[in-house]
Image (cartoon, rainbow, N blue to C red):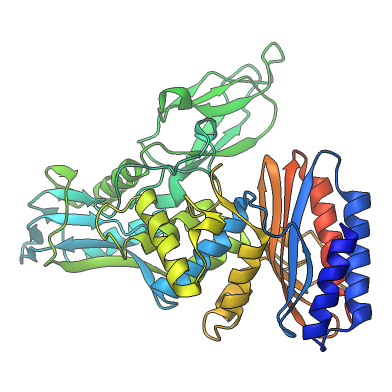
Length: 471
């Protein structure tokens, strides 16, 4: 293994005189030692490091091996979204109508809540849309209240997502209308001994049903459990067991559009705005906005990368697919668009990767360290988009999913990179600023990693070696 890389590095030195022999030797020896001593038994590693400043490869090992990217996939999605939609793109949720408001405060016509795949829509913003309607003088809707979800088909998960992750908030039921990121918060608080605990749902609503079988300080019962009837794809939340102290969790909502539409009707009722029928329907092309909520693409990219938010990544993924198929976009259409875009924009063809979703949850996503480094290198050259991507990535020892990692004096604030983890997979890819001011692009992919900590330690040690170049 070492002799192969020494030969590779010797060739690189011949064509890249800006890189010193001692620098390459030091990187090779140090990373080889980290892998030999720290890589957990039974696991494998593939990685590549590229010196963007000197335009040369610093280190490569099994760099063409296809691995599951996990959440590193979000970098591919973000680059595609920024490049194809543009940095000024906005996700929109609107209340639209063809009707007019009469002097007696009646909206004469239908009202449409139009979903635009906005992952950041909050219940407060939904209320603000109702408030805008009331401010416009509407007290009654004479026509039908519609929810328009025509932007996407009814497939709410991508191929290869795990069905038993259904109740988890990180795997929401995706639709064009998603308030509160498609999940509810559930809080359970103890009361008097032997009595039922208090259960609070956030956002507060009458749509979600609760079955509370728990008791306070009852040691004859097992530990407290908070779940929903996910085996039957039902939204009924079931609380069982012994409630000793306050506990809370987040649970996904089956039918996120149904939930959003139900909240809109609840807020209309609370605002004293009456309506007759409500239904699902497509808003006519010629209509005007009565209220809207928007969120810009850079803020969506930041949430997807900093906090590894799956929903925000999938929203970008599907939104780019709408450039090819504006109505009823699907995960398959979006995957096809991404492949075509990456091939056309960057000259990287699908034989070197397999992408089926936007966030990396799918078991069928595959790419190589070389593919990731090539993409990172290409976007690095874009003076407009690179700063957005770079600032959106977790920063070592500072924020996001790297807040508690690589926080010593030589690494803190030096690594801007996306983390990724699935059972059996641990990944890290992004950029490093070396001690002597060079910019590096890198990707590390660990396979067979059942426990994340040992693989993350190896990744952090490799990054430390790279950060200290030039000291």
